[in-house]
Image (cartoon, rainbow, N blue to C red):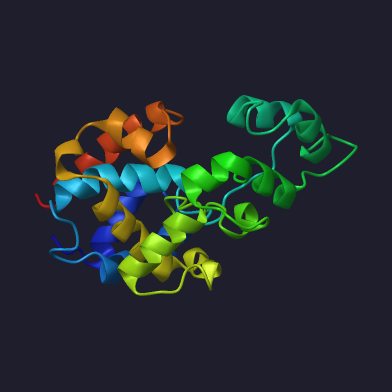
Length: 220
């Protein structure tokens, strides 16, 4: 069901989005999410909202933060995608060096893994097509696919995914393309599809309870 900006404000605030941030986003949500936007309406929204809120740090971040320490890099991506020596060279070390986020992206999203999993074929694709939008769309192939779905050249203009309206439109298109109706309500399975694993699962589960309650209260 289409929500007004005031209704979206109540929903986002109930989920824990900061007041000033909710104010920036409510018109975008009201404009982009209409009757028929999602194949299953609120059933989709109840799973969609928790994932995009978690991935974007409650709509505060539309670009991936790669400000990792060496230890964080190895724990997150594993030695198969970034060697201990690379992690030491590129990671953030207090009092010594800032994280080289471009090098990190090109390493962990590059090589054979990046080519097969993300369609990253050029040396700088890891950085160019790093995670963007509230759901953190990542990789050349995903940018191209979602760009085709929303009618935008995201490969040529990747920064569009850092602009709220394009970003939310892209998230919706990605969701409808990648999350089948049969998966709705299966929080763990959805989390694996969104994030590639179960990182953040507990937080998303807690947000799901809040989001579904807020949507139900909105229709009361």
